[in-house]
Amino acid sequence: MSSQQHECVTGLSRREAMERMAAALAVPSVFRTSGIAGTGQRPAQSVAPVKRTVQTVTGAIDAAKLGFTLSHEHVCAGSAGLSQAWPELFGGRSQFIKTAVDQLKQAKDEGVDSLIDVTTVDLGRDIRLLEEVARKSGLQIFESEGLSPAKVCIGHTDNSAAEYQMGLSKRGYYLGMDQLPRGGPAPPGTPLQQAGALAWEQRYLQIKALVDAGFANRILLGNDHSIAMSLQPTASDRLRLAQNPDGILFVSRKAIPALRTIGVSEQAIRTMAVEAPRRFLEG
Image 1 (spheres, rainbow, N blue to C red):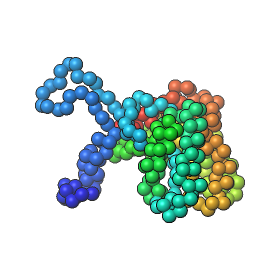
Image 2: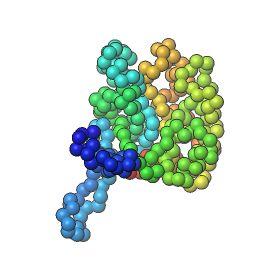
Image 3: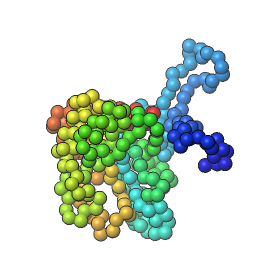
Image 4: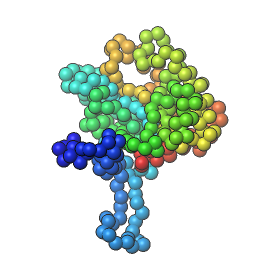
């Protein structure tokens, strides 16, 4: 934060400061409008309608072009600075980019249009790597944030109690049903498998209950899959990948067919996979 920004928020409550900073910093990175800038005069009738865009790592795109969107994924998750200290990690940068591009191209070929990479700075976020992978694979990778419930997604809620999910939905939050591969049986020692995790069948039934209650427009689907991960022993990676051999395509190949089987409509699936992510990112 600059000294000028600090002076602006001095004396404000934490919430007021966050709201003001979000208005000043976050919104311009998400929205772009067409037409005439404010001049104090009423706009002519011919002014073009507002066009909503989403900022991706390769540039702004029309929000209507997001398409089928996975809401919570990682191209590479690790400790910040690890790739610089250990440049040969994952076969080296060039080899890893090829690996990631190949997997994302396959995802695109099977119907995935956009992917939200939610890797934070402390997990080694590398925007230049994401930009190169996105450009070479043709997949769209991006970020968004908000403050009000209508602009907030609570991640990893597919492993939560049904009452908790319903309560958040009624308050206006988006729900990240974004760890769907972790509902299956896992061999002993599999990393990241939470003890007592809800089974696939239960997760799908709870999603259907939310859909039946009219909250399909508040559900975002995802895998929470990492193409590469250094937050575990190297020997554990084989177990992690064996737990979910479909990788980033689990939602497309397994979760959506299972939801269809229990009676979730095609319109509801489109709402969760296409329309809800678009509205969430539009703000």
